[in-house]
Structures are given as structure tokens and as C-alpha cells.
Amino acid sequence: INEIPSEIPWVLQIDGHTDNIPVKDYYKDNWELSTERALSVLRLFIAKGVPPERLSATGYGEFQPIALGNNREDRQKNRRIELKITQRVNSDK
Image (cartoon, rainbow, N blue to C red; front, top):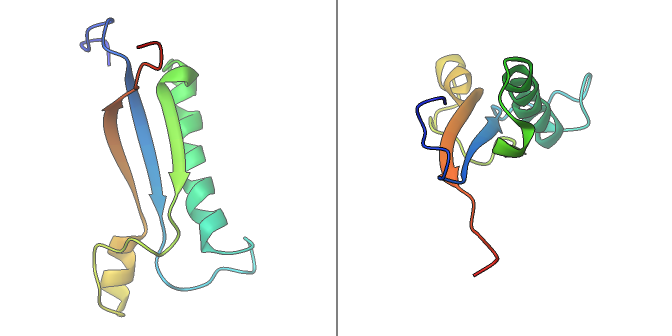
């Protein structure tokens, strides 16, 4: 992060994902679980010194799988965090 030029309005987008098994014992639904998953990573980055205005967190639940099977290995692949560096759009122009 220290290597990104300061004039670039970058944002680190943190995307949380789940498998397709409901977890209603702990969370309302997989949307909530995936959002909490992303927020926990966001909080870790803040604790490590990343400015909060440079972070974004989103949960996608089970609706963007990378593995389409319904076996243990595929579900495990779908429980994940994706990190994407993007650029903030300047609304002053």
C-alpha cells in the first residue's frame, strides 16, 4: 500500500462470500455471514494502519460461487474473501 502513488484515489474493495449452506444458528442468513466476513478483514486492515476511507466491504452471500459443485471441496472454495484494488471516481468533474 505504501507503494501506491498518493495522487491515485485507490480503494481496497473487500468482498465476502459463503457456500450455499444456511448458517441460521449464528447469522440471519448467508448475506449477513458474508458481510461479517468482509468486515472482519476490513477491521484487520484498519488495525494494521490502512486508512478507513481507503476501504470498502461488501457481502455477496452464496450468489457468486467460483465452484459449482455441491460437494465439500467446492463449498470450501466458495467460502472466501476477494480483495480488489479499484479507483474512486471523482465527482468534482
